[in-house]
Image (tube, rainbow, N blue to C red; front, top):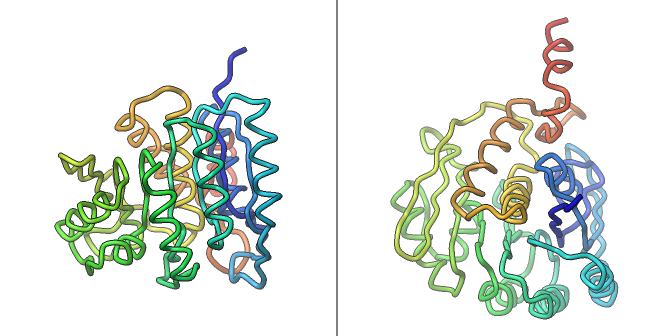
Length: 274
């Protein structure tokens, strides 16, 4: 049985809601086998991150080479790369791989607006990874950082997408999950010529941990399956929106989206009706 394969290069979330854990669940529930390169370990739960430890760049490279030397990878995505040394290593690895389905989720700023990597790492990502990307998927805060534009409207998102496109990526998808009011959940896609405003529906839930990771992973999965980029985005948006509707009330903080909703829709409904 021929199976599509996707690779995630990202950090580990011990709470299971984001990072490599979210990516692998998303790959699986979009009918793709997931492989992984772990760049850093985090000690976190639904409330907080208590500790972060980087994986050595040699180990990052070893994981990557172990996967691609044996398994045909159809698409890959990056998530948290943590520091300049890891970014440089990952950029070299991706260049060696030579594939075209490369999604860069520039994990630079959290959904709350906190910068997660230093300025040197940001510059390394821009110069080494962005030119290799089929698509970049910044959240609103990352789009502001990369474009220098304060984003408060859809027109601002379009202007920011143009600025980011000029950094050398082939396409840009600015994620609007952190927006407020009527713009919440609206994304803007730019391919260098046309803007597409993407809106399914906003899901009102506090349990949205891992949304951005999962959207990127779902797009990557559908690229691995051979879909065009617009179709991959549409399928991914549908998956993540439904996963938000089935978000999980675990812990006492921000819970994760319900990646495995296709397995448990009937059980979920029965559980919440009783």
